[in-house]
Image (cartoon, rainbow, N blue to C red):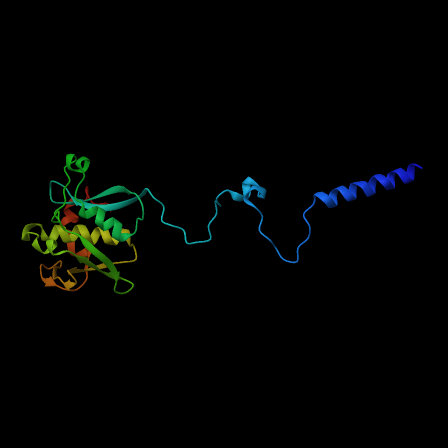
Length: 202
C-alpha cells in the first residue's frame, strides 16, 4: 500500500508540473517583457566595439613665457584627446591661470585648424586657417615652435610638421633663418630652448 501511495503522489506531481510548465516549441518564441527576469532587461555593461578615448586625459601644450622661452604646460582635456584636440586646445590661447603665471601664446588668437594629416611615418601636415598667416614677423618663429612642439609631443613618432594655410603650403623658418616648405622639427627652434633650460624639459 505504501508503494502505491508513493506512485500515486508521483503521478500527481508530474501532472501538476505538466500543467504549469511551458510547452515545447519546434522553434524559439519571444517571451512577454513581464516574463523576462529584470537582470536580463538591464543594459549591458560590456561592449565589443572599439574603445573610445578616455575623457579627462592630460596632454601637453607649449606656450611662451615672459623671457620668450618655450614652456610646456599640462592640460586636462575632456572627450577625445587625439592630436587634433590637443592642437585646438593650444589654439585657444593661455588660460587665465596660465596668463597669471606669466605665460602666453604667440599664435594669432583667431587661428583655427581643419586637420592634422600624416605624410609619412615621420612627418605630418598641419592645416591652419588664414589667420595664422597674419602672425607678426616677431612672433612667427615662436608661434611655429609652439605648434611643432605641441604636435610632436602628442605624436612621439613624428619628427616634422609641414604647415598649410587653407590647404596651401606655408613656408616656415628653419634653424638657419631661411624660409622653407620642408617639415620643421624641434631642432629648428633651439633659440627658444637652449637658453631656456629651466622652461623646456630636457
